[in-house]
Every structure is written in structure tokens, then in C-alpha cells.
Image (tube, rainbow, N blue to C red; front, side, top):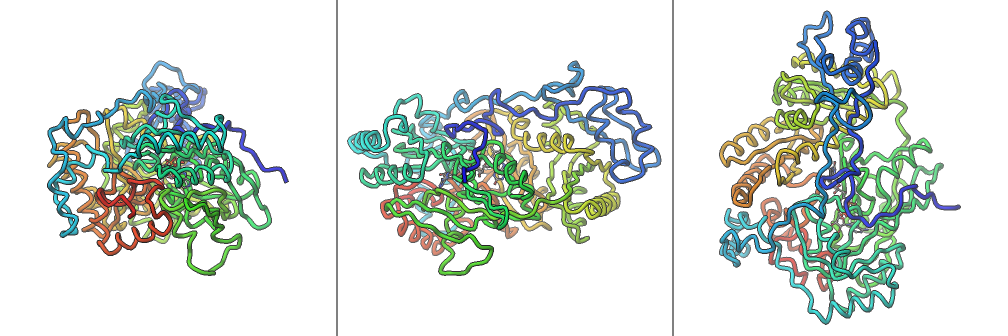
Amino acid sequence: MAPWQPERQATDGVANGGGDDDDGAAEPVLAAEPPTAAAGSEGDFSGATSMAGRLGLLLESLASSSTARFLGAAPGSSRAAAAVALGGGSGGGNGNDACSRPLQPLASAKTAPKRPANARARLGIPKQSPSLAWQSSARTPPLLLYEAVLLSRPDVPRPSQSARDKAKSLLDERLGPSKVLTGKDACERFTRDESEAEGEVPDAVVLATSSDDILKALAVARETEVPITPRAGGTGRTGGAVPMAGGIVLATSGMNCIVEIDRKEGLAVVEPGVILADLHAAVEAEGWFYPPDPNSLKSCAIGGNVAENAGGPRAFKYGVTRDYVLGVEALLIGGQRISAGRRTIKGVTGYDVTGLLVGSEGTLAVFGQTTLQLIPKPASVMTLLTLFSDVNQAGAAVQAIISAGISPRCIELLDASTLEAMRLAGNAINPAAGAMLLMEVDGDEGAVERQAERISGVCDDVRALEVLVAQDEAQRERLWAARRDMSHAVRKLTKKKLSEDIVVPRQKIGALLDFVREISERTGVRTLTYGHAGDGNLHVNFLWNDDHEMPAVERAITALFERVIELRGTLSGEHGIGVLKAPYLPLEQSPELIALQKDLKRVFDPAGLLNPGKIFPPTQHRAC
Ligand SMILES: Cc1cc2nc3c(=O)[nH]c(=O)nc-3n(C[C@H](O)[C@H](O)[C@H](O)COP(=O)(O)OP(=O)(O)OC[C@H]3O[C@@H](n4cnc5c(N)ncnc54)[C@H](O)[C@@H]3O)c2cc1C
């Protein structure tokens, strides 16, 4: 059978959309529909009796003229006026009001301001931080170490010039020059991902088109002792694909073939460079569904998703990538090709090596083909948008919805600062709103309607300002485009930002949000929070403009992480540890657990060549 090929051209895995450096290629975001005569008239709204009709406000607010975009309260509704006119994009609108202004794409990574190579020295921080001493004795490092985290890269030794030259010539010889980039400009684009981490320009970039290419590149790395860093879409948030010591970058985005969709068994076999949105479209066309949906889905790829165990809004109901990976082709730096896992739903043979490799952030093996489980596509979906006067009310609504036994497939929370960022990006949002929940229910049509009614009732009980429902697929898409574009909107507020994807038990969301406000007041660092509230996974964003603010940012991040651990949460729900969170690992994990993981790393990669500088705290990077 001929493999299903996505229409998308193979890219080089340099982040190119959906993320912060999406320049010009930005997806149209919430393009306003052309005004219609009836749109926005209160008659449309008041006459509705069904949930979908009653909540048709959203449609009118999107389609109406700017003056009609703030609609009055529904006749008979006790709730205050609430309208969300999510403007922007290039697809319509009258073009002369703030609501129809397109959101601006972000600067590309290529043009993004670079952190000076020796920012640490520039800021007068000693090269050898005395605080490194904590590692041998205490579990919790003192603040001084944290102050240096953003300012320096881990101490991963760069290979010798002769080793690098040898690696380049062997790659050329074994893969052919068309699959190997060595020019500085070409390689420089692979120095960064969608985080603030900055690596060394790689000496060579391998553009792999097959698992054999991956094995050849790994063999060269092993023979020359040059580090090698796997890369997929380059949308990572913690620097996972950033080459900390230069060496070889193994770009897998040319491996973008959906090898098989088994309609009878409900599984797909895919190469690591397949863009997630392409996989969604392909399996849904066959009546199947692949739930993981990181908001970067238009630019991230399966290899990166599996390596990061990516989640997304739908994880609340459907779980994360690990829950759908049945098996992997794992290519090891020792030259072995391992088939771990199975094609069946169940299977408990031997250790769960697949489970270990999923989420290993490119430090244990490189994925070739991955076998993914699919589930039947839900017959119907409904998207609800609810507005609250403050974030505590929204938090109470989340608790109440879950306690009522309703299981939306996602519950996304946006706090007041995030709404402000959206307003500044051209979205007209009711000024009375201080928090938003974006929720989605799915199932058969009747069940969807019933769940939506129940959610509406619960939100009424906690005095939501308004509950709105998307009326059709186009509106759903617009709402999600706005959510996915949040990063762009936030970027307009600041030169630099770090998004920390912490998780706390759901009943602690309120406490966490209070604490974030407190940190912001205490350190003077601007914050805003949004994220997957249904599973307690919030993205706390720290915003700053100048290098001199970085120590304060570090203190704020440290305080956040310490509080998260006190609340019995975890440091990362989906972005992984990468390089940026590595120094904080001992806050959550005991020295024994870290040592065990390092032992495992040594089994797979004795010389510490595969993606060095990641996961383990600085000075502990070398595997041996
Ligand atoms: C705007 C935006 C929104 C986001 N939203 C979410 C979200 O909702 N949920 C979420 O989970 N994440 C989210 N992310 C983070 C990011 O998109 C995910 O971590 C994603 O899974 C990374 O995929 P990628 O293809 O870009 O991987 P890359 O960034 O290229 O790589 C990520 C890691 O995977 C490793 N890797 C890549 N390919 C392979 C391979 N073939 N074998 C072994 N290791 C490999 C790399 O070495 C690196 O450690 C978001 C990012 C952005 C910019």
C-alpha cells in the first residue's frame, strides 16, 4: 500500500508557525466574518430557546460591526452584558476598527534578539557560582544558583576541532552532501527552539529522510565522540532541541510520511517528522481520532511530541501522548535498532521500554516510526466560552464542573492579564470580564447538548457573566485559533517571556493563582497565567524586557517552583525539563531518583553523546 503523504512540503524543522517566531506564516486568527444584515441583532438572540440558539451571541459578536460587538445582556437573562468579539486576521471585517485588525506575527527566531554569549559575565555574576556546592550536600539548592540559570548554559564540553572536522567528513561520505548542512548560516537556524535557551551553532545538520539515515548519523557521533541532538518541529519550550555543545543536529522533519492507517485496528504508523495537524486531518478523514493536541499542533511533529510526552487541552479527558503510543522504533547511539512495544491495545511483555522512551526528551534514543493508537472520532463537539468577573470565580466553576461529574474534553483558563493581552492584540472582550474559561464537550449529539446545559447551569450558580457557544465549525476554529495564538498576543507585551507549565492538584489552582499574584508584587516581575485548568496544568508566564531584570525573574520562578512542590504539584506538565528547568530538578526529585535516571541514561548512552545538557542539573550532564 502506498503510504499516505501529507501535502505539506518537508520543512527543515526550524520552527515556522504557531509559535513565537511565526513570521508572516501566521495562521489567520479569528478573522472577523463579513457583517450581515441580521447579524448582531438582538432578535436573533432573544428568540432562541435551545442552548445553542440561546448562546448564539458569539456568532453575532463575531460577525457584527464593531459597534454591535459589545452586545447587551440577553433579554430575560440576569447576567450582565458580555460579548466577545474576537477580531483579527485577514479574512473579513470592516477593517477600520480595533476588532478587525489582524494580529501581528512575531519576529522570527532568526531576527529575535540574541542573549549575549556571556550574559553571565556581563551581569557581573562570577563564572563559577559558589552555590554549586549545594549539589553534594543539600537537596534544595540556594537561590544564588537559580539566579544564574537563565544567564548561562550548562557546562557541556564542546568536542575538539579535529573531532568535529572528522564528523563532518564522515557524514558527507556516508549520507551524501545533499543531506548534510555545514555552512554556518544554514546551521545557525538550528541553534534555538521556541524557548529562551540558546545553544552553540551546530557543526553539521543532518536532514534525515529515513531511519537508516538516523542510524548513520548516530554511528558518526559515536565514532567521533561528537554530541548529537535530535530535532523535530523545533517548537519546544525548554530548549530540548537546542544543541548545547554544537556538534550534530539530527533534523527529522523530512521524515514526514504517514506510513499506515489501519482502519480495522484503529492505529497509525507514522514517521517522526509528521506534523501533528496533518495526522489529525488524515485520521479524522477515516473516522478515527488522535486526541493529543498541543497548541503548537500546526508546527510540532510526532517525534517531538513523543519525546516530550506532549499534552494539550484535550488531555483532561483523553490523556497525553504516552496514552496513545503503542510502540516505537528506537534507534540507539550504540547502533541498535529496537522495536519496543506492540500493535495491540493490551500487552505486558517484559519491561515497558516504550513507556520509558516516551518523554525521554531525545536523551535515550531517536525515534524512527511510531505506532499510535486511535479512537473513534466523537460524533459531535460543542465549544463553550464563559466569562467571569475574576479568576477565583472561574476557578470555582472548574471545581464545580468536575465535582458535578461533568467531563468536558477540555477546560482552558485565561486570567485577567491574559484577557488584557488579548484585548491589546485587537480582540474586543467585555471589559467587565476578569477571567475566561474555554470548554469543549464531545460525544453523541444529545449527550453534548446535555453536558453543555449542565455546564451552563453550574456557571450560572457561580455567577458567570455569560456563557457563549460556538455555532459551527468555523466559530470553533476561531476560538481555538485565539487560544493557540495566545503566545503571540503575550509577546506583544514584552521582549522576553518564559512560560512555566507547572501542575498543581486541581483544588489548589486558586492557591496557586493567589501566589502568582503575590510573587509578581514581591519581585516586580509581570506575570500572566493561562492553561489547561481541567488537569491543573497552568502556564505561568514571566515577562521582562531587560537583562537587568533577570535576577528578579529567576527569584520569581524559583518561588513559583518551590510553592508548586509545597502544593504537591510537579514542575512540568508537558514541556519537559530540557535545559531551562534542569537546575530545578532536585526541588522535586530525590538524589537517589536522579542517580537512578542517570544510570539508565548510561545504559542507553554510555558516553553521554545523545542530547547532552538536558534534564539533569548542571555539572551532572556528563553521563560518565
Ligand atoms: C505556541 C506553542 C504552544 C504550545 N503548546 C503546547 C501544548 O499545549 N502542549 C504541549 O505539550 N506542548 C506545547 N508546546 C511545546 C511544544 O510544541 C511541544 O513540546 C512539542 O511536543 C514539541 O514538538 P516538536 O516537534 O517541536 O519538537 P522539538 O522542539 O523539535 O523537540 C522536542 C524534544 O524532542 C526531541 N526529539 C525531537 N525529535 C525526536 C526524535 N525523532 N527522537 C527522539 N527525540 C526527538 C528533541 O531532542 C527535544 O528534546 C507549545 C509550544 C508552542 C511554541
